Image (cartoon, rainbow, N blue to C red):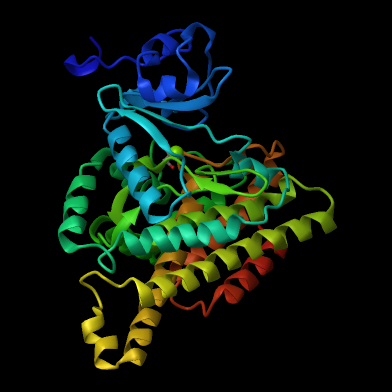
Length: 425
Ligand code: SR1
Ligand code: MG
């Protein structure tokens, strides 16, 4: 017997072949000669076990939730139900943006495990951004993914009964939301127990941020939106470690933080991680010309994600508005095309402002909170790392506090370029 009277048992490389050997969805792919299967544990995230299981026929990924936070250990229990929510999120994302997520082959609720497509030769996008490599289709894929999943998971598109049932379903993902509510929206802004930052280099900047009343008020406005605006089904943790890329495609993984929340959260977290990668480049590329070129490429990806998002969201607005919001009966059917376009513009502007705010908070929590990013953590020279982090902190503050004042991405990137040239400490 495992936890709480169930038969849950964490998998190991020794037991995995025997335990999956009776599952048709697995043997259909790997064959029945379980003795020849090879397994390795490759999980490098903060929460779960992840195995690659291979045979001479094929390979699969097996992701299993642990009853605690892997990063911290069993002193921080975390329910296995996150696998249930991840499975439901993956099936919805696959419908809303076909081909954007790994295919799920099998789900076992009691064992909290998902067997899914092994994405190969894909690598985690964050590693690509640390290696200074470019990608041709990333921005288009991510702009479309955001537009399609956010639009099609909302009252703009869904039948209201389905939307309400989904809001109720995903409201059960309490503990994962609780992580975000604390680690993202609160802990960075006071001296919380699990926080850490590059010290002493950033101490003064951190003290100033934590004493910044305007910032703290705006962050709590955004937290309030996160907690109470059930606008759409979100990935919930859409950073560059949740994206896998091959030479010509990008796929989104790991939606266990799924919730119904404001559209700007996914876009904001995503853009924030590109901006942090931008500011971290002095720690990864020495040659100034090559570094400038790569940093500009990162900004161009952000610009394209946002413009593809707007285009695709607008297309869906014009062609798939079948939900209870902004019904066509009120607009197009009355000949009020212009009013519909005006309403679309208002919605996009609201998403824009929220996205900037959430981006700023993500930039803060990845430098001040518990969960940092590899782009900064791998910079060994602590003074250099602190310089990179200080720029992200400053950008983050501007994004949160001035999010209603930016006229467009060009203005945001003008600011990024200025901050990247400035002395920080
Ligand atoms: C305790 S979990 C810390 C972070 O890891 C996950 O990937 C999420 O980003 C979470 O906030
Ligand atoms: Mg994750």
